[in-house]
Length: 313
Image (cartoon, rainbow, N blue to C red; front, side, top):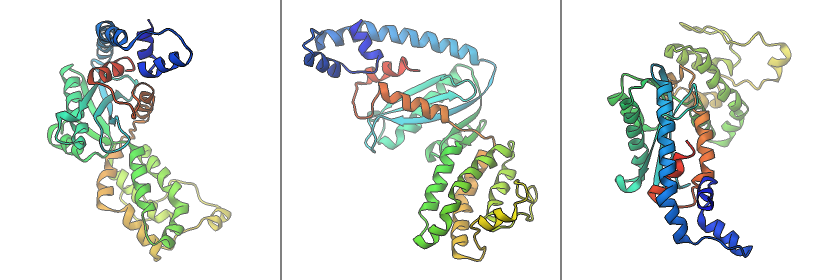
């Protein structure tokens, strides 16, 4: 029971054994602990995981799924040993599949996430689940795989990742004098991404046009020419609100710098993948919870990593 409790609590034998030594408690030795783990604990957890997965797959049969996918490396840097790729059903929050990739299976750690994505999606398709939409971050290799190998499925980008990326590009604007004029608008720009995605109802053209309308708003122009969107979505602004806003002059250098970022061809291309308002917040929370059981600064053997993932899915 002690050997199993150590694993299920997310602890390690070394740390608990050290605690017992300090308290002068009699405790099991490493040979006995790892023997119990290999001969008993792993088999029980493996059996429970597959029983639970069968139930989940049965629940998801016949439904058109929107799956959020993301990879988590076991290292805070760029020299990860493992990458865990997880798919979560965004409607129910259940995990139909995950895959653990070891760096020795690839030529570099940069390719682990793609391999995990491909293996996990293949496992889901083998279970005859109907996947309609896949939501990921803007991973270049996965984007290419979706275009070439999974063109029958809609590919959406996570709104939070997109918002974070655009904010990072805005903060990189130089010189700092221009950035100082733009900074007050950053929260509004990030909120606008979410609002656009929520309002467009699966219409990528409307998504793009709504996104570009931001450039009119920040320069105090609230009606503008457009095929779908011709005015801002907010009610008329009061004189007090108009006076307090730090509007950007459309002929200023700061406006031109911001326009260059917001209308960048890569941003415009990717913004159309937000039209279904999908995000992977629950999956990010799950990955945060994994830190308790699979800390990034501790190394585990492959089998230990797999069964630690089994009992937290």
